[in-house]
Structure formats: structure tokens, C-alpha cells
Length: 112
Length: 137
Image 1 (cartoon, rainbow over the protein chains, first blue to last red):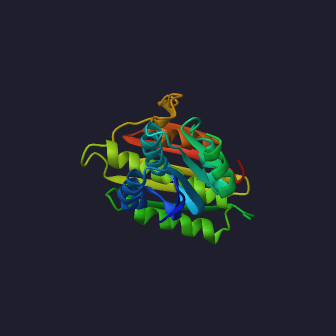
Image 2: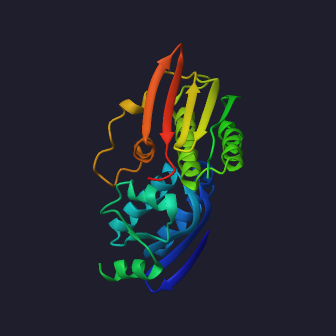
Image 3: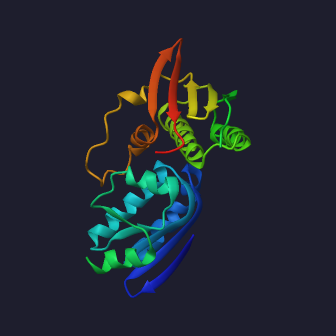
């Protein structure tokens, strides 16, 4: 997992591999702490994620709610194949935005 | 691409390592028979959601064993997961509320949406969940 500030108020978080219950246990504290400390919009890159289960959604939703309360957004981009299909079925409308590319994700933030 | 029917069955004691022990057996079987990537993804999702659910909700010692049966055919994967825990019918769980801010409760909803068919029966003290997973959505 990597964090990179890509603007004064936007951080990109890149996740890798499998987002199953065990790996979420491993990364959630660091993921949540970094987003809370940054106080920025978050773009989450799932382009290198091959599997995600409901525990990953729970982590993303929990953090998106915190960001929303501070006037920021969490946007997911880059998801492919079944990961993208799973996100589409997850009912995240209004809470988390889904974008195809990083440029589209930045446009979502800019349009807010 | 799957060209003929293949099957696998195995039993596992249920403990916190059941997920880590069971999934590689399923994954190796699907790889061996060149199952479509979507079948592997959804099988993994169902296996993880069911075992995680037992781990979180069954009382300590309430579930001692699971039995897994797979049948792979060109039209999809039939996966049955049986456990001897307390009766729990995931098909009877209502759809999650429209509120997207709700953090939990999405696992069973996702299983329903991503499988072609999901059936439950309680039989001689065992929960038996059977799903059909197709190669395309």
C-alpha cells in the first residue's frame, strides 16, 4: 500500500493484490490513520487488486463516511474485471464515487 | 476454458485457519481445469463470506467441520459449502437497506448478486448452501 500526495488536497492510495478479510486486518489501521491525518480527498487505486471481499468494502465505506463529514470525497478508480463488477453491485452511490481512470477520479473531485 | 465436467470434494475441521487451508484447494482445482477468472473470483467471495460469517457469528465451538463440494462444467461451477454450525439461512436475510453509508451486511448481498443461483437447506444438523457461478455476469 502506498500513499502519495498528488495535490494540495488530494492523496492517492494504491492498494495491491488481495483485499480479503486477513489482508484488511493487516492494512486497515494504517489506511485509516493515513486518511485521517491527511484531511484530504482520497483517490483509491484498485488497478492492481485482483480480489476484494465485503471486508474491503466495509473499510472503504467507513473511511468515506469520515471524509464526507470533513467535506472530502473518496473516489475509487482503476478497478477491473470482477472487482469492478463487485463494486457496481455494492450500492455505494452517494458515498463513494467510482471512476475508470485517475484523470476521471480527479475530475470527480474537481467537480464537487 | 472448461471442456468437460470435473469435481472435487473435501472436508476440513472448522477453526480460524479453515479459510487459509480451504481456499488453496479450490483455487488449485479451478486452475487445473482452466476455469474462467470470474468463476474463481466469485467462488473465492462465497467461500470467504461464508467462513468469515461462521467465524464471527457462530458461538465458540458451535461449528466443528465444513464440507465443500465443487462440480465444474462448461456452463459454470456448482459449489456447495456445508457446515455443522447453528442453523443460518443466508437466502432469508433481507437485502441491505438502500442507505449506502451502512458499513456491514454486504457480503450476503454480494453473494446473491454475483451468483446465478443460491439455495439453502438445513439437513441433519448441517447448513448446506449451494450456489451456481457462471463464467460471465
